[in-house]
Image 1 (tube, rainbow, N blue to C red):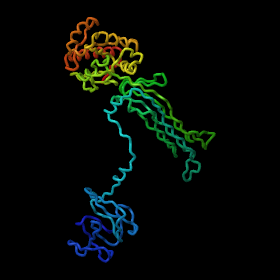
Image 2 (image 1 turned 120 degrees about the horizontal axis):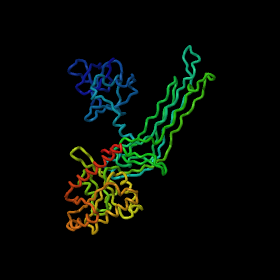
Image 3 (image 1 turned 135 degrees about the vertical axis):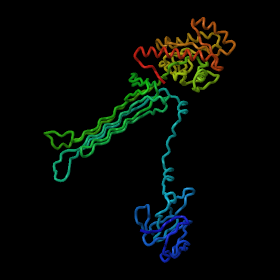
Image 4 (image 1 turned 90 degrees about the vertical axis):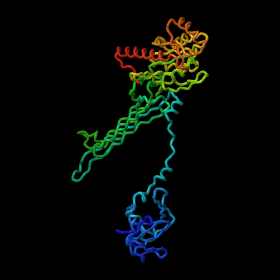
Length: 464
C-alpha cells in the first residue's frame, strides 16, 4: 500500500504530477526523474499513488475530514497536529520515517493536567516538626460481597450454583521503622483496602492488601487509658484494625435439601478503633540536666548530631539522639533530653512531656553546670524529680558529668562537688573538648554492664 510520506527536505518519493491539487507547487527532484515534492509549512510532502493511509492511526480516513498542521518541535524533531492547514487528497503521514522524528507524545499536555499534590516534607523538615503524640482513627478494609449465580453451558442444563465468596478486607498494621524519628508523618485517619467481590465459576475475590503504618521505635499504643502495645524493638508490629470477612456465595449454601440456593451474604465492615500513639525516645543513655547545662553542646562534641545551641534556656524543645561510634564497630545511642526545672513531675515547664523520654533510657548521664554557685544541688533536684515521676527511675546506673570546666570559677568548685556527692564526677568541657575521652570510656563501661545484665536475664540488648 502506498501513500504520502512526510519528512525533511532531503527525503523524496515518486509522485504523479497530474494527481496533485492545482494550487500546490510541485518541484521535480534531482535524484529521480518524474518525482515531485511539495512544501507545506516548511515540511516536504511526497506522494505515492493511489491510497490515502494514515500510518499510526490504524484506519483509512478521508482526507477532507482531517485537518492538521505539521509542526516541528525544537530540538526533538516531533510533530503534532493542529487545525491550521488542510491536506489535499491522498496526503498521509510518513511510512518509513525515523521514530525520533515522528514520535507523537501526549506527555507534554498531560503533565499540566495532573492535580497538584501536597509536597512531601524532607527528613530535615520532619525533624523540625517533631511530634511525640498523635490521635489516629484506623478502620480495616471491608470484605467483598458473595455472588449468587448458576453454572451454565451447552448440554448441561442444571449446572448448579457456582457463585464465589468475596475476599477479606485488609488489616491496618503498625510497624516499627528505625528510619522514622517522629510521629509527624503519621496521619490522623487510615482506611484499609477492601476485598474484591466474588465471581462466577466459583471464583473467590482477592483479599485486600495489608496497610502498614510506619512508626518510630519506642511508640506506645493506647486505647483510651489502656496500653495495648509497646513497640520498643526494631521490626515490632501490631494489628491496629482487622479487616472485615468476605461474604459467602451461593455455592457455600449448597446442601442435600437445597440443591439450588440463591442466598449470598455481603461482606462485613472492617474494625474501627481510635488509638493514641505516644513516642518515648529509645536510647542507651539519656542526658538529664537543667536548662543551659550544656547537654546539646556535649552531644555535638561526642556524636554527629546537630542540635541547636544558644545562650538562652530551653533551646532544645525536642529530644535529639546521637550515635557514638567506637573502634570495634560498637554503637551507643545517647539522647539529649530537654532541660528540666524544679517541679517538672507536676508538669511545670512541660516536665511530663520531657520526663517520659527518660523512661526508655537504660542508664543516665547527669550533666551539671559548674558555673553556678552550688552545682551539687542540681544533682539532688534532678534525682528528686525523676523519683517523683516514676519510682526507681533515679536508681538506674548513671554517671555525673561536670561541664564547663574551662571556666576559672568552675574548676575551683570541682573538689567541693565531689566531696558533697561522695562519688567521682567526670570534669570536662564540651566547648573545648577537654577530657572527653574519660566520658567515652565511662559510657562504654555502662553499656557493657547493661548488655551483660540483659543477657543474664535471657533478653537481647538494644542494638543500633
